[in-house]
Image (cartoon, helix red, strand yellow):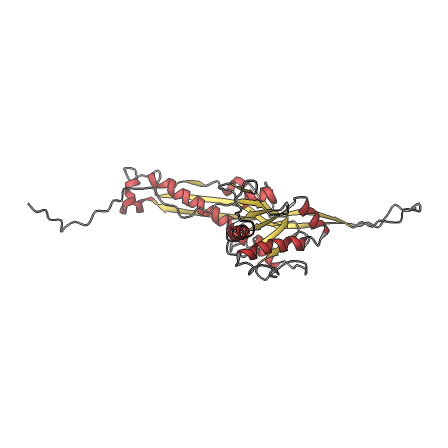
Amino acid sequence: MAVAFSGLSAWSDETKLNFYLDSIASNDVLPYLRKYGNVFTNVKADTLKLPKMTTSITIADGDACFTDIDGNNDTTISQTSITLKKGLVRDQICVHGFEDYFTAQGLTAGQHYKGIGAFEAGILADVSARTAKAIGNEMWNGGSNWITAGFTDQLLTAVFNADNVGTTTPTSGGSAGTDSEGVYNICQALINKAMTNVDFASAIMAGKCHIVMSPKEYAFLDQNYVKLRGTGLITPGLQTLQAGTFAEFMFPGFPVPVVVQNFLTGTGIVMLSRNGNLTAALDLESDFTNLKTGMDQYEEFLWWKFRFKGGVGYRDLTGSSIKYWGPAS
């Protein structure tokens, strides 16, 4: 007995409803800023002004009695500004469109939907992950609607004097930015340049500075460390690596942590900064992770939104607090 299958299509199993989410880049910026910078919250104003003080000291001849307490030691008080702006991520999905494909399996019976059933958690997880990625990227690199000038934009448009490293290739080692030895020498050059400023040097030796770079430069640095020391950076006592936050290790010979930030990827920037310099100003921090969602009143659309307010900036964007290697400004 023969069985004819000519009227059938080959069977495909479409019963598995667990989605593969390709966006897993978390927003590691705020954990980084909480440890090495500043995060100011509950800021409602559109501008946050942060005070800065500088006092010039002159040591006078102390042999004679003075008749005027004014020693001509001038104190200058100034402010740096961070601009805050509201950001909004929103959309909606027609639930009925899921009925026409394998996705119908995840829907509940009936035509009055309370959600997207088995798919809802996956969709909202993807929305949350992609929103976190977009927020972190704009904090570093800016965008077109929310933060138009992120940390890297502000860095590359600042005017630095000649003691900044800029695009100078370190004199020893490989090609800066492309060769692993070059990245190691970039870090060394940043520290050497900072050591010419007594305040910057003091901050370095007191453990109050750090180097920040992308995962790519970090990988090059690890390769170079293997060449120099015969071991990689992932060594007990040298590195702290916590999933979901950021990687860091202590640069050999100095109390200077090297910190990895995902959203520096592709910038080519390696930066040495005094701690407490890079700053975020936010309204409510939980707004950046608090996804609001629900069905519309007609039970047709699943809607979701993020609404938040914030901005980023530096306390001191000068060569007295920052040295960097990267693109020409």
